[in-house]
Image (cartoon, rainbow, N blue to C red; front, side, top):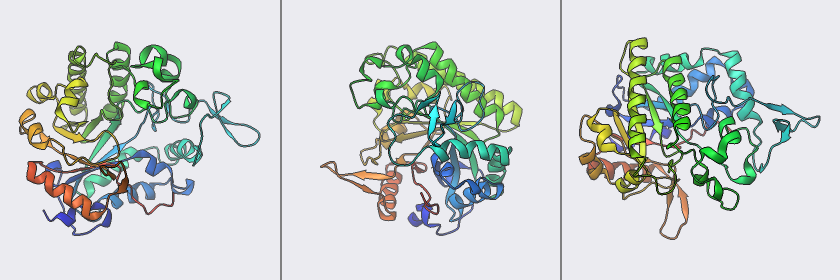
Length: 374
């Protein structure tokens, strides 16, 4: 494949592939990108145009559409939908559970909360439209579930409509290190603890909603939003619990296959470093051996693409037919901590290196489309 065809944002070199992830690159579509459009864009035409924007230049084999952080952007019986318990005071200021939002800065949450509700009203079948549009264009449409998103989950940012009822009401007993969350600017201390049965069952229920309610070609489990997800020091001890969770996801996908009449594959975004993954409770070797995953996505845990991604080692741990898709993220970080945004040239360079290391395809994360005015 020509390297410039990897530059999905510039829509160059039309190439068309039919439903085969390893035949082209994978793009993750962050849900925030879609909801931050103007309300008049919450239409069927815009749903279709959004798909077309990702694949116009060819070289893309699958789009992974994210539809949750802690709260979901879809109606849910298991989790907490984004617009739940949101109201406004006489000044038009947003309230959550009757209280002003805490820690606000930058853009208001108005569009993020109101647009999903508006789109579901205007286009109640928009998830089906996405799937059909992708297949019309010869690409796969996957769900992407953030397994533990804790954006702005510090102690003084709690009253925001991105945090689920489970986190707000039971954070003290269900998170990995709640005792730290009032004194440390560290989101990962506030992630849910997957060592607890209630947490695993809750997230498995949301996975079931994704897979059974809306047809797809698969689901990505984005474990890096956010890791770690076990109590400090429990990564090795609780590894069997995570492995069993993956078995339960596979069973759910098998059930979805019977409903939809075609294969439903599973992808997992994991740390770029094998040792980090193992310390987090991810026994990827077992996942591969038991056919619990179809795609492994070694990724940086943050906003900086990592040249040290252990592609060759991951290939040994997860041999074919598991597809290996190392991640290129939206920023780079220098040795001194300085950051820069990715460019066509940097993306091409990383992709070339990863292919040389043995990657089957490349996975692009947080590569936002900029035709919208944010």
